[in-house]
Length: 256
Image (cartoon, rainbow, N blue to C red; front, side):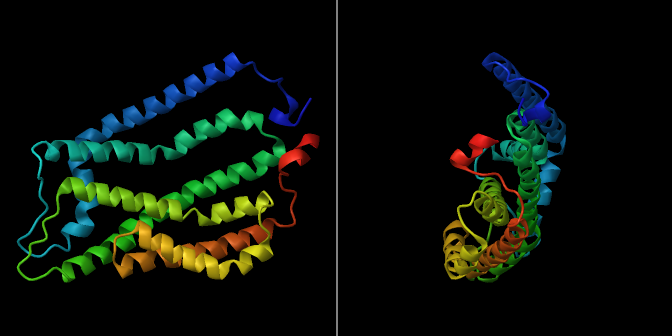
């Protein structure tokens, strides 16, 4: 008897795992589909909400445009689909967790679940930061530097693609504390090494921000500074866990 599943059940054959995986994939797809169909009637409202940071800062007499014939229909539908996926991320990750958790040992589950929850929360926090802080400041800057005689009339499809990429960039970059804690738990780095790496992390954060954000100083600073602060948060969390019984890596797991 092992620590897996609390020592209550033997290992399942491969076919049982495949059947369970299929069931969880079907449930995940069904939830996303149902939510997507429920959001379709509100797709235009969703797009109006998403476009608010830009529309509110467009010069008087200008508006967003739709270049392609079918763009006014497909762009809000595309947003409804991505919104359905975005909202159901916790459920989708729970299905993944429920599938792999029985194969983990107790001490592995003790750290894996809090890290998973933290990763979800930080991703949502990064997206919220991008929408409520970055986009308004970015569009205020861009509309302010538009040359005279040029009308800023953004295509609705390109705007959606731009915002989705920005959400993804900020959501992923806000995972820095989770990445730091995982590296510390695996024994790849120590807390002292994390502290010594601060100057390199700061430079790396600004390099990542320069590559991943629009080519303006404002958005680069708004990404790099939070990444540096989140790195410090990761160091604090790693220090708190330093003295605890963490999962060993490699051959040391043989005695689990």
